Image 1 (tube, rainbow, N blue to C red):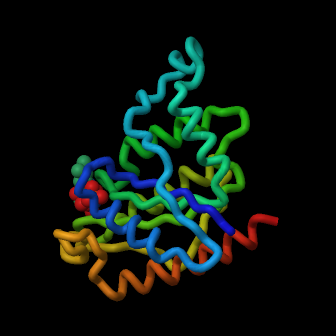
Image 2: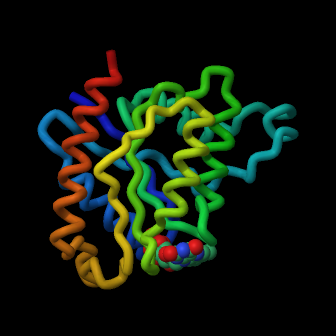
Length: 185
Ligand code: FNR
């Protein structure tokens, strides 16, 4: 059984990316469970002086443990100003400072929703680069890029109502399950 930890790159309550993440959690194929990881919303902005004077904050340690225990990560994030939202990047920066980096050899799938035409694809490319630097194993295709996001979810229930996107989510999660099994050795 592969246990996948889901990470949402948006911190707001009505997040479309969280709706997409929930659709993926519900679409987990046989042999996979997907659960949202702990919150990283209150991590201090990375500063070596904090690490140097008082060590890693307890919540960062707990987060690193959760990543270590996961067989794979699913990151679902918006694009902020063509790149990775600062909170998500800050979490990656903190975890990258452990001697044994929790991301090493970790299979990762990426999804995004954005309001515009490009659907967060620029964030996806930047996140791929960033996660390569911490030795993740990046899942390739199918890509899940949901553009014109507001129109694709039911505002009242949060359900993903776009059939093409729902099909892609299902296909990606099935292929990600096989990818995790392949790289797990
Ligand atoms: C955005 N948005 C946005 N959209 C996009 O397609 N490209 C971008 O570069 C940006 N930049 C950006 C910066 C900031 C600070 C915000 C708050 C928003 C719009 C974004 O796609 C939209 O608000 C999404 O709904 C945000 O995702 P959540 O919070 O709904 O998951």
